[in-house]
Length: 202
Image (cartoon, rainbow, N blue to C red; front, side, top):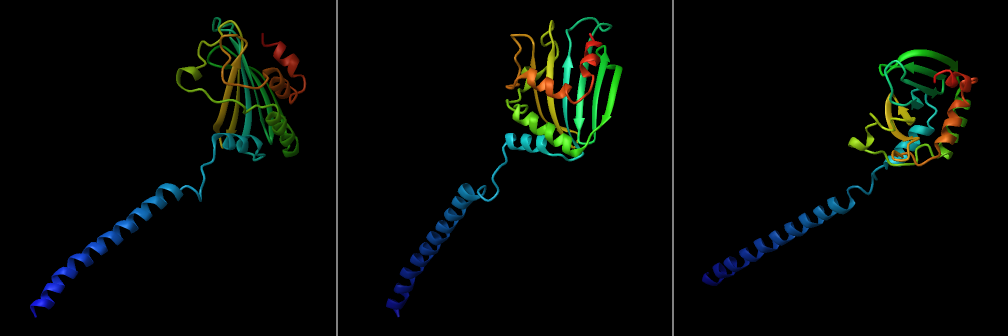
């Protein structure tokens, strides 16, 4: 009887210890799976892929926009313009002053096939090549006071998915890594007589 009681008191702690060890091993395995494999089934989509998808989508709620701002002068003399292209429309608008008082506008229709050709041309011209700046480095106020600032944006459902800019001033190259001349030519070619329209701005 005494021997049986002794055996029980010796076996119970060993059994408890084995249970604790088994639970600990199971917990460590679960933790390792969470750390190393939780993101493997749903990999994160890079900002580059998001921008590419937004640019190359022919959906009606997507758009590309080029904005050009002139030298920083008096409110009366300040000029800017923008060209906005969607699958359904093409627009060029000129503005006077810093409050964007509209001077003139040309509105034209568009179609999906034409828009697809255009956005793929923009993609191959590296319109979304470059890393967006942040904070003060992406603040365009006062940038290139004696020259022009060019901003290129990709919109999806009225949200800007990508914005890159550059200027004619050597000290303010901005975030755009593409040829501004090539991109500008692509945009203006979407609007007949756009050269005459722009010449009348300044």
